Structures are given as structure tokens and as C-alpha cells.
Image 1 (cartoon, rainbow, N blue to C red):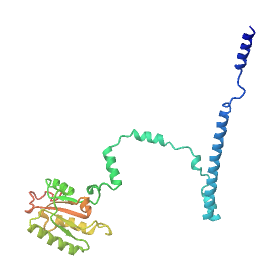
Image 2 (image 1 turned 120 degrees about the vertical axis):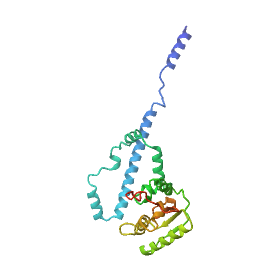
Image 3 (image 1 turned 180 degrees about the vertical axis):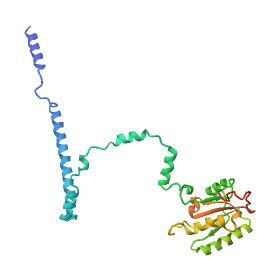
Length: 249
């Protein structure tokens, strides 16, 4: 009986709470460590600001520094400002329908991976003797016809360029060429409008060989673009059916 009582007393003593609990202070230690890290980061930021101010003072005299502080009066530092609603703006932009092909083409143009279509610029010129020849002008712009000769007018005056155009056209018709080109440049150095380019366009419409010109168009970007004019020739002179009919389209 005494043995049983002693056993129960020992059992009750063993159930008493431990005096040493090593993990009781763990939470307190973690909080303390966190505060120390935050304090260290804050001190690091302050030191960085002081260093930047010191370097600024070394490079700028007191008068310029005073003017700078006067101009910056009332400006809120960027890190203290509320975060912009970037996520909200991005979410709104996702709901806007986009033409993926158009976006791709625009990206290629910006990155310089795709040439600019000359017909989409104000420098583009074209003309056709008839409504049927409009399609030929579009094909000229795409470069569907093989150019059989180039007439380079760079550095010429208008008078000399006109003579060169006449000689070149006469030779092209005599040799039976169907597609030729005039290199006149874009006229970027001209005071107003491109001089040689305007002369070539006017000469094709009103010159002595205008009836042999079926269509003309600015060349594609890979062959000079707006600085070159392609011309498609007809073996026989073009005849107007009616006097009142427009000669060029």
C-alpha cells in the first residue's frame, strides 16, 4: 500500500511543468532580431542619403545648391509618395482590343526590322494613263517589274536633267525596254519642294514622251523609295478616246 502511494506521489511530481523552457523566448528573440534588421536598413538608407548630399555639395557651390533647394521646395520625395496605380492601368489596357498583326508590324518598324511602305508617306508619287493602268502602278510600287535601266540625275541642274531624261527615254524606247527608273533623290536639301523629283513627275505627265508612259510610281524602300521613280513604258503611244477624258489618274 505504501509502495502504491509513493508511486502516485512520484507520478504527480513528474507531471509538474518544467522550470526551463528554451523555446519560450524564441518569439521575443525573433522580434528583436527583426527590429535590429529594420534599424540597420534604415541607417544604411540614411548613410546613403548623406553620402549623395555630400557628393552633390562637392560638385556644386553653395549658391547653386541654395537655388536647387529653393526650386525643390515643396517637392515630395519619390519613396514617400503613394505607389502609382500601375496595376490598375495595366488591367484596363488588357481589356482594350488590339490588332495583333498591326502591333507586330509597328514593333518591327520601330526596331528597324521592317521597311517603311513608301505609299504610306507624303513623298509617294504615282500616275497612270488610264483606269486600267492603276493596277500597273500598284505593281510598280511593289517592285513586280524588273528594271531594265536607271537614269541617275544626281548633281544635275534642271536643264541638264531634262536633256538627260529625253536622251535616256529615246534610247529606252528604241531598245524596246518596258520598265525604267529615274534616280532623282528625295530633295531634302531643296528649300521648299524637291526640285528634280518634281521636274521628273511633271516631265512624265507633260513631256514629249508622255504618251509612251503607261504608269509610274515611287520605287519600293529596298530600291531607293521616294528618291527613285519607276516608269512602265508602252511600245505604242497612248491614245485618248475622248477629248474631255482625263489624261492622267
